[in-house]
Length: 553
Ligand code: GTP
Ligand code: MG
Figure 1 (cartoon, rainbow, N blue to C red):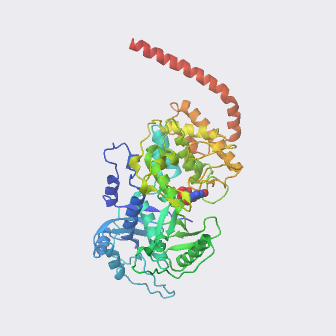
Figure 2: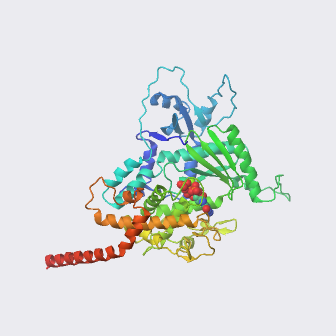
Figure 3: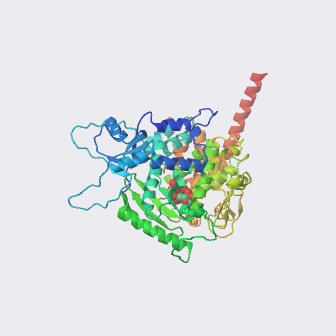
């Protein structure tokens, strides 16, 4: 069972200052959606990684005085920011201004001696703080609950929203990763990197997937990638003379076997020596071999892979799409929550659609709008400069990294319209003959008979939704049609529903959407109803037009 993560943040921390700084210059404050960082992905990753290296994770006693705690730690150097959270106990994340402070703190830290058990002496940045005198401390930590809202609270928030756009933005605001949660994700990777460094001193453990691609929901897993490129490429040191030195290494028959061997030892290492790493499973025969484990203190379910640079590049591409237009994330969050509410997605792997595939579908849909809201991957490639050129395992992964070089869309459609049109579009999509392709931004003939074909943007001969069965696809189509229909009904009912009745987004997130039979029955009646409604609407608009005309005369 996953521990509940409750973040307790400190008011006026550097985190808040950072958030303020992330406001793009010259933009008008219209809401949180403008606060998306507009840095290059690599810049953002490097900055966060460097911050994480100056950070420690401390298990604290239940009752602690924040001031005394900070004073005690400040002996090792100034603290840049900190926050507390609960996850089966109280923890603090403390970021020092200087990296040396971490070493100083570690030098003053001892390995515990236990009566019944033996401690494996591993010096990490995950520490425990003990009180010498148990009685004197009082808890005076400010609590700020960072959990996503309960279903009930969410329903309330959505029902009281003023418009569907407001509903989708509320959903995004409530579910998106907080600054503190993001810091904790980078810190966890950095702690794992320290363990992996026992074997590969120059390795880097980088987060990827939804933790960094702007589409992460509070509670999502932490995908991490063990990057050994530095270890491989350290031979840049030029020596004079006619000699060249190479390391003596073990050779294995394939890249896949090398990956399996590396992950196998890292898995063992995490299991035996990794503080807080539990439930380590080595899943080495998967298409993409991985080590899965729980990081107890942070509460994250972690998937560690290596030799997976394309996935990191996909995260970078999604980061660009998520940052280009504030409607993208709101719509993706809405669709992801909708899919989860109807069990179209699951945390267990299987024949269902993944969040990654759903995100691709939203991106594709936004490329198909007129004018397009998002550019195609091919057009991002044409904007690339020499620095952006990138080939991974023979696949062209070139696209522009500098966000300021991409022209904003002139499309002004509302989120309400986009959500409805998304369901209409995919409720009627010719999945039997067409594939989805964000590289070209248009449907293409399916190259094989997979029920759902979404072309992998970089390994273009692969289908990212190969796992999806015909029945799961049918379920998606039925629910999309049903939701389009519900939103249409609610459209007319909206003004008549009282404030605490689910409407708009709330109505389609509820499992009480009319069941398929009644929907199908209603669907049959739909064309008749539609004609009546169209007639009424045309009468209404004629009346409005006449009214305007008379007024203007
Ligand atoms: P959630 O974890 O569900 O929030 O979303 P996620 O985007 O992190 O998905 P997931 O953890 O399943 O996968 C992590 C990353 O691996 C994704 O963001 C993709 O970059 C990549 N990935 C996942 N599935 C596929 C796939 O089928 N094909 C390819 N090429 N990449 C994938
Ligand atoms: Mg993930």
